[in-house]
Image 1 (tube, rainbow, N blue to C red):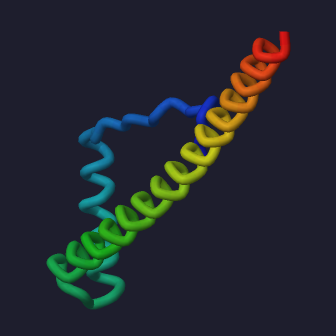
Image 2: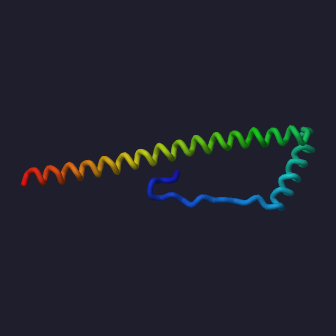
Image 3: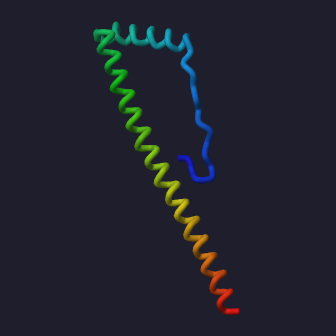
Length: 92
């Protein structure tokens, strides 16, 4: 998971024509091998895409929680440091 100070760069990927053609061939092969229609295979792909999106949302929530915990720890440390400074000033 990404962390507050170690965010990996995002991997933006463009769709290339050869990848589209590969997908068309794959869908045709799956349709033939499973005796499902092209539309059924595409619908299954759509379902898998929804599952992937749900997994990404959950993972993003986990990362957010982790980052907020790290931010909270930083705030607690800053408050402790400020408290120590104020106490030192008051005791002069």
